[in-house]
Length: 242
Image 1: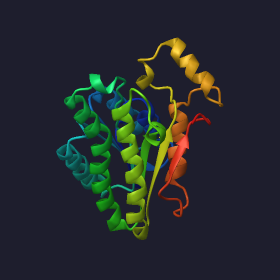
Image 2: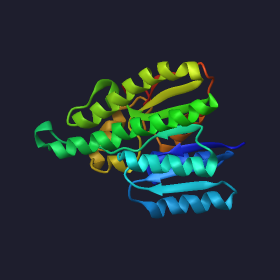
Image 3: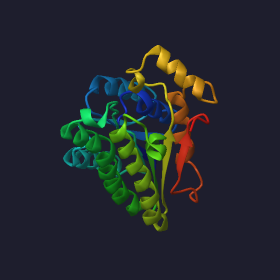
Image 4: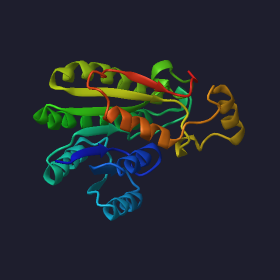
């Protein structure tokens, strides 16, 4: 039987690149987005043209009811999932004094709670098969923290801790959990920075470039096929930056 991969936040950036990478394999796709359903429709059409079955869902994945719906649809269509990529996320850049309580709760739900909800239901699906992989898209700021990105750093630090803890819990059931702590990746999330700021950042990276979404997508695919002994790892993917 074909395996099924669920990718959250798949309409743009890293999530979209992961979806396109898995279109070159023999997986069923389940893709979610918050708002950009037209972009998911494009991916679905592209997948259908090459014989890949693709289920798409629009909604806030930080809402547990939406997550239940996604997994119910995936189970009905494909019998569950085999690989989960927790990629949905948002970033804010501001001083803590300028962040409202509402802003804090929004980023916690979007970045961290969504990963918990999906991991909980994903694990339930994988336990029935005694196999599976959960791959969390994290950040180096979850490892070292970033000034003016306290909330974002907190969510990614939480994802890193969840990765290590959940890996221990699920390892006896042959389910591997790992995280990719991304460095500076060339996505729309960096659009708030000036060209001068971006060049300054690139000069700090030993690899002398930003990472590409396709770089992350290739690494996700490698982890999806990696030896089952690899679990509980938060792997920095940053061109030697941090």
